[in-house]
Image (cartoon, rainbow, N blue to C red; front, side, top):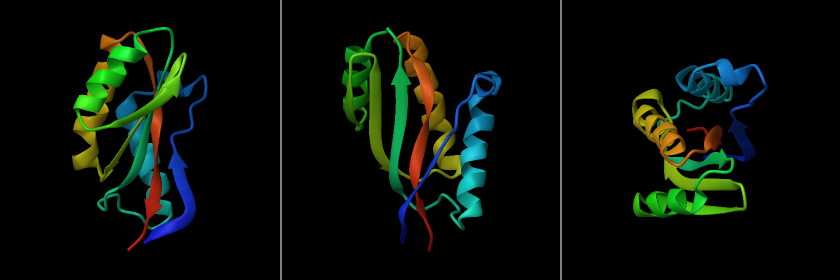
Length: 117
């Protein structure tokens, strides 16, 4: 069951940019766990990119990989349905970081719905 209106987002501050993405990902999973969510059930998940890089190419590559894309100007949001437990999520997190580097964008984290069983 998806908790009504509940979402967990990686909260970024000036200091968190110094924290590696795997640690930030773990913080989001910890917040999910506080709501009784193990992350294993697939759910709506969003990934955020911004900056002056190549959003058009990011959108094209992401669509080919099965993501829904949206955004304007200097922001792109990728959407998918997926599990976010550590084993499932680690390769996707690495891919997001690679795409950010390849298209000269900043990967600004992710959010997902809270799902409890």
